[in-house]
Image (cartoon, rainbow, N blue to C red; front, side, top):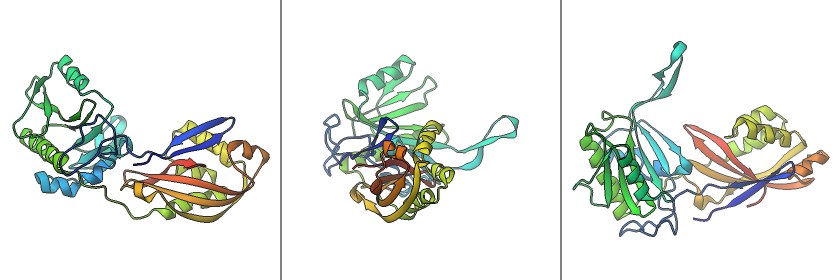
Length: 304
C-alpha cells in the first residue's frame, strides 16, 4: 500500500500531513502471516471490516452491536451493548459506551517488551493449546486473562483485550483468539468499502465557498488549536467556486477512510498566498475519516 504525503501551508510554517494508509506493515498470504518484522504491505488496514461483526458472529457466535475504529484503522473496539448514557458520571451527567472487547495490530512494538511489561506487574505468562499460532496469554493474579498476544514477528502482533470477564468469558476469550489466529495463518479477510462520501467532501467546500467558516471547521476532525489555524487560513478566501470533486486513491479506501480530489477556482487576500492558496486554479485533496457513525474531514492538503 502506497503512503501518500500531503502538505498545506499555515503562515510561515509548512504543515506536513500524511495520509494514513494503516500503521501496520506485513504481507497477507493464504499460507500464513508474514514474519518479516514490519516490511512489506499492510496485513491489517481496517480491523473493523476485516474482522467484521459478521465475521465475529460466525467465529464465536457473539453479537456485536457497534464498532469504533482507532489508530488509522488498525484497532477496533467491538461493543456487545451500547447506550448513550452507559457511564453514569457526577452531577447527573453520563457518557456513551458499553461492554467491549478489542483487536489491535502493532508492527513497531517489541513483543519481548510486551511480555516483560506484563510480568513486571505480576501477570503470569501462559500458552493455550487451542491457539495454533505463536502466542502468549497474560494472566492476572485472580486467574483471569488480562490480554492475549498473537505473535507475527519480533515487533509485530495482534493483541486482544476486553472490558471484563462477562463480555467474553475465559472460554470465549481463548476461542476468539484461536479464531483470529487461524485467520492470520490462513489469510486475513480483505477490507470492505463504504459507499462513496463524495457529497460530504463537496459540502465541505460548499460551506467554505459560502464563507460559513465555523460550520466548515465543525466538519474537521482536529483539535481546537488546529481549527484556529485553519480558520485564519480560510478567512483569507474572498471567493471560491467548486469546479469538480472526484474520488482519489480509491485502491486505498477502507470502510472508514476515503480521499477526494477537488478542483477549485479561488480568489484570496494577499496574505492568503502565504497560506498556500493561488489566485485562480487550486487543487486540494481531502481525506475523510469515519468517527463512530460520522464522517469528518481528517486531512486537507495541496499536494499528493
